Amino acid sequence: MRIASDWKASPPAELWRRKAGPAWSSFAIGGGLIYTQEQRGEFEIVACYRAATGEPVWTHRDKARFWESNAGAGPRATPTLSEGRIYTLGATGILDAMDARTGAVAWTRNAAAETGAKTPAWGFAGSPLVTDGMVVAAVSGHLIAYDAATGARRWSVEAGNTSYSSPHLLTAGGTAQILLVHGAGVTAVEPANGTVLWKHASSGFAPLQPAIVSDGLLIATSSDMGASAFAAWPSRLAPRDGPSRRNGPLPTEQYAH
Image (cartoon, rainbow, N blue to C red; front, side):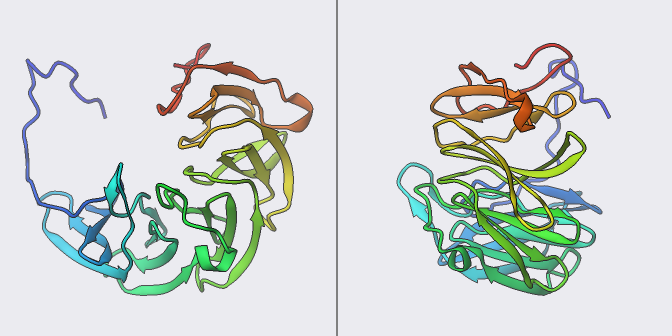
């Protein structure tokens, strides 16, 4: 699908508009439905709407409220849609698994409490990663994995320090790995058990996602030191720093923008 870029010749037409509570969550889309998180009073809300009309379909609520003076109230992370379920991480660390059609709760866990992670200054912001029958959540430098079907805890590891990034799955050197960009750099762990595979040191608050450029090559970004490019395998680490701050890198054939 191509989106017309000449808005003078083909101006976008508003289809519907609906009020929503404050939040920094974006949308997950599937099956004619859209999913997001909102703050409504003292409750974090997972909300499902019809994509065509904006009509509410269902909501789920958790009694939790996060607020800070720069960004205000509300959840930060975007929901993850996978195999008929929606997975959400609230700003205080509540991890929910729900039926995507009905909103029925399959299980809920408090990832912050179970890792001992303290809520960072801007709240927990990473979207859950679903892979190999697991849901992996990032909570302030900790990674914790749960069984996607039952919510049973699989493993956890302290991967780094403060982070606002989502866990990121890739394969490099023939090895599957989950990456977390955090304030002390980047850490890669084994998906099956959380064993640390390698680390790369840098500094910053890490609000962005790495970008895959070629076989294992990625760009991990940091709000303090800019962009750092290196290969996702210990024997091939070759940092190249640049001026990125809070915009994710866009890789093309030869360049990163």
